Amino acid sequence: MKITVATVKPFAPAAVAKIKETVEDAGYEFELLEKYEDQGELIKAAANTDALIIRSDKATEEVIKAGGDRLKIIVRAGAGYDNIDLKAASENGVVVMNTPGQNSNAVAELALGMMVFGARGKFNGKSGSELKGKKLGIHAYGNVGKLVAKIARGFEMEVFAFDAFVPKEIIEADGVKALDSADELYSVCQYVSLHIPANDDTKQSIDYELLSKMPEGATLVNTARKEVIHEDDLLKLMNERSDFKYLSDIAPDKKAEFEEKFADRVFFTPKKMGAQTVEANLNAALASAKQIINYFENGDTTFQVNK
Ligand code: 3PG
Image (cartoon, rainbow, N blue to C red; front, side, top):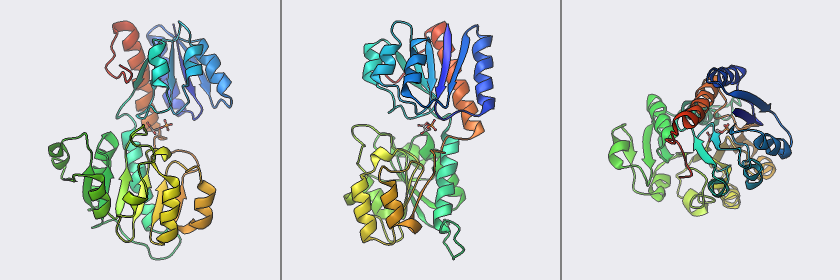
């Protein structure tokens, strides 16, 4: 039985070594496909393995079908699994899992780092502002949102959150004010940090109506997914409001236009960096390997997302 790591954006070498050791100690064969440039290489890898560990790599229907009878499980080493065709996986008897929480701290630290970077005018030498005392809205309160709240409270920010799926008591137990709607969150908070997944309900949901509620000096921080932003609406709003900043770990499709029009008010990481720490790589990679082995050995489907 073979377990293949297929990642365009590689894990830290220490994380790869740890997966290899874990896989081989459990008596499985290990294969590595890194920095591949052609989707065909992923398809080929899928056709020759029993299990795949991927990151934001695109596990399309073609990839899943290429797995034939052999490919049994795909683990997304990370949180968001919008890059995997869940329907095709279920139809082809492939179990899909993620590794929730394993890279959350890295993403949360980046969200706060981007806030500081934005508040200080991207370190341009002019007087910037501080996060202390500012209102931060966390949209939504999952593993990353919770950690952003914790770190932001260390900065003495006033922290608010909205999550339709998390009971208010859970949010408020962390010293965070739980609000009733996204509308309220955006109306109250000068900073909003996005932590919603990209799905049919959320795609393009961060639109003009919502964003225009944000108070003077607004900053939107996106370490989630570009797809949740309504880019044309955001462009319109930033044209109208010279106080509005957008900082994102996932460059928008209209990156060039944003950068040309609002050079001082936007920042996009050159590559998605949220989960790109040695620690997060080690956590997510190792969890992936262990989950696959536990599935093969014991049928454990705890983290399955296509049930
Ligand atoms: C996630 O969903 O876990 C993060 O967005 C990290 O994605 P990456 O593994 O592609 O960096």
